[in-house]
Image (cartoon, rainbow, N blue to C red):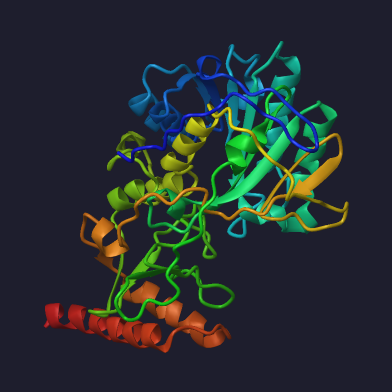
Amino acid sequence: MLVGLTRTHVPVLTGGHGSLLAVSPATTSRAVGLFAGIGGIEVGLARAGWKTELVCEVDDSARRVLADKLPQVPLHDDVRTLGALPDCDLLAAGFPCQDLSQAGQTAGIAGSRSGLVGEVFRLLDEASPGPRWLLLENVSFMLSLDRGAAMRWLTEQLDARGYTWAYRVVDSRAFGLPQRRQRVLLLASRGADPRSALFGEDQTSDEPEDHGGILACGFYWTEGVRGLGWAVDAVPTLKGGSTIGIPSPPAIWFPESGHVGTPDIRDAERLQGFDPDWTVASDALEKRRRTDRWKLMGNAVSVPVAQWLGERLRTTDDYSDAGDRALGPRERWPRAAWGRSGERYAVNVSMWPVRWAKPHLREFLQHETTPLSARATAGFLDRTRRGNLRISQDLIRDVEAHLERMTIQPRLIAA
């Protein structure tokens, strides 16, 4: 288990653009999780000392995992039929990203899946007095899709309800996981200041710039024409879908040996911060597709990210906005910002709020990788030849050699 960060704070909170009261640790302990998936937010919050009062999830496979791993937490099956929120201090919603992600249909915030975030505001409007905190989580692509329409709609909804909001793009690599996963954390409150929680810690990235022929590199074999999904000493973002229409594991290239393989699902679970075999309960479903567990992992929230935020919500540190910059109405959404009452301010912080110890990818993996199949390898090489991406020739050479091995081996067995 990753050990979270703890701090001693002074209960004072002010800012040049206004002041808000912080929440004491004793009052921020109960959470409700909507669109809970397999419980990444809830498990992370539990590691930070929070108690989840209710989870809501519509997917059968994910619900089976929740029932298996969080049996003490009441489970509801559809946010649209959830009548009311139980008393809680935090409402968390990693709402569906299919309409907002590059791997999805990019229909936008009005899409049939991502548009379900409107149910969050329905439940908030009907709650009295309602939770102190609201947490929304989604893909970073939402900041640029349709010129940032999704974030604009969300912040307008929050402004209209009197919330102060803050968001930050964070990378899971900052939290000890060798997975390049960049997600938006949008935190809002009517009576507390989300800025100190989200922006109070900041580190510089330790992302390696070059593999140097030593570090393992992750890439998506399902791409190759317009994108590669490349990561040095890490895997690229685990995804619930892909450019070929199915959730698939990334490939990992080991330059020293030339081996090209895909990680075991148990290591994929660990790459999201879960215990290995966290999703095994989904295997019990009839007619379960082979890719279901990969889909569950690709749609999950990294557990240590939620753990860190759960701990940060207890801060009573002062936040100084002296260096923040007012955003114009037509400016692009930056990596981090906050606002209220129609005003918006950019914040100069990185995607690495912390820098927890992160093992090298090859050291992190506990299970043998599966050699990338000949069919998958040939498809990747074909797409790279048709595309115009600048791809490492060392990678291409090793992938071609891998295809040769995978093609010859079946012939030898047959002979």
